[in-house]
Amino acid sequence: MTETDLDALVRATLAELIPEDAVDAAFADPTADLFELGLDSVRAFDLLDVLAEAGTDIDFGEFARSASVAYIRGAVGVDA
Image (cartoon, rainbow, N blue to C red; front, side):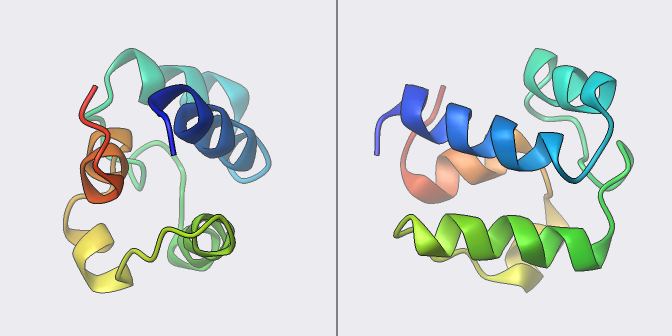
């Protein structure tokens, strides 16, 4: 998966789960904590399910310790 494809998928999914300004903040600062931006654990599972359907398996426990766009990019192998 390319960085552009991953970012588009994550952005579209997050837009369904947290407010748009929080999505913008998550991409403006990819290290921003998604839980602090409004993502809760149930919605985090929704995000991880979408990523799994796209072929990227991310462990919830690991994600919860560093819930950010930067973590997702790193877990997928796209460090931008």
